Length: 50
Image (tube, rainbow, N blue to C red):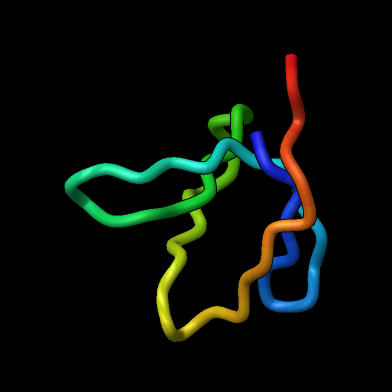
């Protein structure tokens, strides 16, 4: 889980890296994945340890 800035908005999302690339994934299935690529401004502030 990461605390991240994605296009000037803060989120707490699962950070996933796999053969399809990297993305933020919401645990709530109502929300789409957020791809991490050059078309989005992204930075990670920290991680959530459960």
